[in-house]
Image (tube, rainbow, N blue to C red; front, top):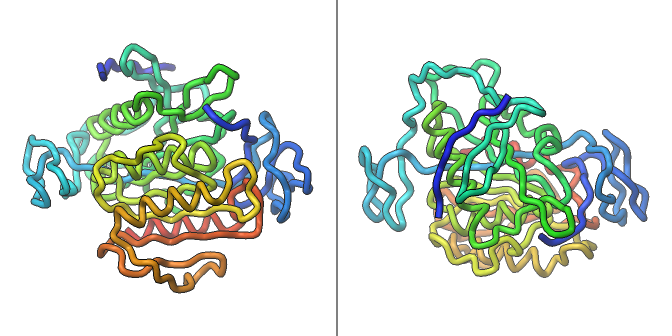
Length: 338
């Protein structure tokens, strides 16, 4: 079943499919665990086409319908102003008679015409969804060579955060036949904005809690969201990401909360590139250089001096190109803190 809407608007690594925090899929030089297993330190990224193991994460954060002046309070019917986060907690979809999603399972995508290109995605609602209650939204971006179907189950943030709307899009295929988030000419950011607008107009969304999560190319897209839509999204959780989906990172420059991770022995996306992306978010959040150990995960630190309400947690662990074993629980707790 396909739901179609028309919105006018204006690849990189051969990454395998790994589960968030549990098993690597496909083969690995260092011995990847099977579904439910733990990826051993020193294992390489699995080959494309492996079976997705259990694990996962989520994403998002959004602007309210209404506008605000710079730093001001959201008004009805306007658009968000420079430097201010729209503060509404409900959208046009609140009170709607639509209480189910026609594109919640594999094979039943929703579609949007974005600049003449048909883009597809999934929308999953809480089992107890009510149009009278605003829900957070989590965007889930798959790695290169992966798929939206994979990301529907891979990140598994919904297990700990079931009371949220999950939006899981499909990336465009590059010349090598690998789907991902090259974001050429901002196409994937435009797609993200279109998906969010559709979800806001159809379902009851809490505009103050929109999140994004992703591994590898999905982490890169989460960083792009953090750069270009930081006045809309509340927090991002990029794993093994970089600025490859948005080299300039010159968007709104509004602060955005972040939980990020990167393997110390990553040779697919060198950790120096992950740190460079992290530093862009630190700059946006006006953080200092002082860190303190994270109270939950020994591999993580919390940056000090960041803008109030926009924390940055950064985790460097002994591993290759893979999510950390503690990723699912840590990201879930981070999103739930807002």
